[in-house]
Amino acid sequence: MCEGPSRISGPIPPDPTLFPSYYKRPFSGKESKDHEKENVRRIKEIQKKCKEKERAQAQSQPKPVKALWKSQKYENVESKVKAKLQESSPPPKPEALKFLRAYSRCGPGIKPCRPLSPRPARTKGGADTEAPEALGAETQIQVEGKSIDFIKHNACNAKRASLRRSQSLQALAELLEQKHREQEEYNAKQKGHVPQYLLERKELWRRQMEERLRNLPDPDTPPGHTMMPEGQRLETLGNLKQSQEHLLKDLVMLPVRADTLSMQKRRVELERKLSQIEEAIKIFSRPKVFIKLDS
Image (cartoon, rainbow, N blue to C red; front, side, top):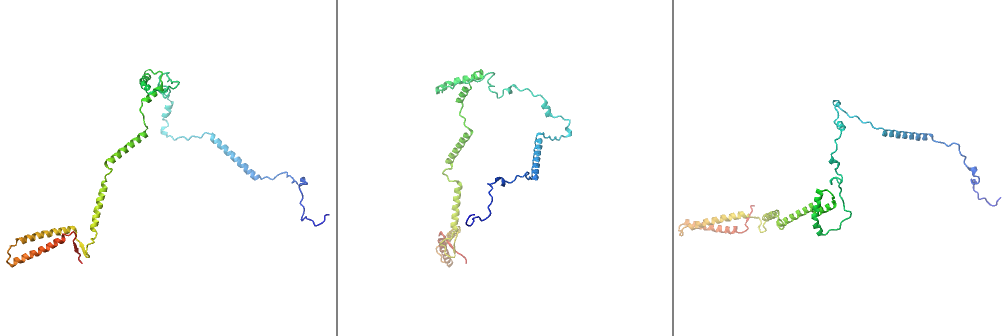
């Protein structure tokens, strides 16, 4: 026995490492199995295999072609297409056999021979002396048809051929030339000249300004008065001058010695009217004449 209080506060669990065979769970002879789930999975697999088999059979068998509808009216009429297919095709033409065939235009059994190595560059003098040789080569090609050197022939043609520009460059050059002509025409006829519509607009603005100034009230107009229009003033002035001329003629026609009372009254009346007309002429000769408004 041990002395002192014990430190064990509960039961002591067994140690399985001491007897492992004793604590091992016994193996059951038959495990439980879910037969319902297994049967469903098996049925799905069988259905999938059947569908794949039917699909493969449908793809391997030829599909039946639906017969075209044909009227009974044409049952005894034979097809023209079938008759043409049964006819024997005509023999091909000899020109068609050589169409696009290499060396077909060089004559029978003749092929162009090419130089084995490139020739050295020729000088300018050599190019001039080669022109008759090139003409001779052309004659040889057309007449004899033997030993044709296409590289030499093409080189000679390339020297004599003119430079051909692309359509886009030609169109650009024509457009630039047209713009240059239009600019020259503009500089000669229109540049530095005021357009006609601007001149007309300027004249219209001037007339509108004059009309506006005429309609403005005159600052010199006294209250209760208005300025007489220019046309009316000139017309009144002309009438006054005519009246003055008539009165002067009447005054001249009077006798020098007017002893009678009527002649004296006539002379006084004419002189009074002349003085009034002279005062009126002085008034209407002014640039501005004001008329009193009726109250």
